Length: 125
Image (cartoon, rainbow, N blue to C red; front, side, top):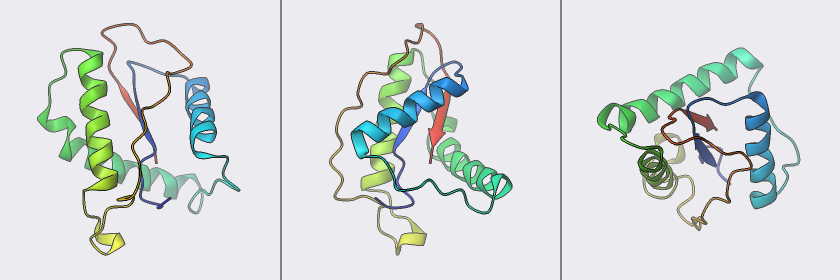
């Protein structure tokens, strides 16, 4: 796994800390439990990296889309995530995608339900 690969994007109107933990647990089941979880130089550095990545998501996708339903948002955002991982070149990786060899398996059903019409995204990076 590349350090630039986006493992999941959760689309919901709102979410709790437990929702984040549930999503991480799903990733551990589907991708394996990591030996460790690294936070770059503390929360302030991680926050900067996450904000920069979210800016890419906004600039490359969200600013150009209007989502009419949660289903539409989930499909379009998942398509972008797969493109980001397997096609989009990254300068920090020598202009290669982070996971060109990755097999894009369908995401397992979420452990929580989201009411129709809700829309927010969470990115674990």
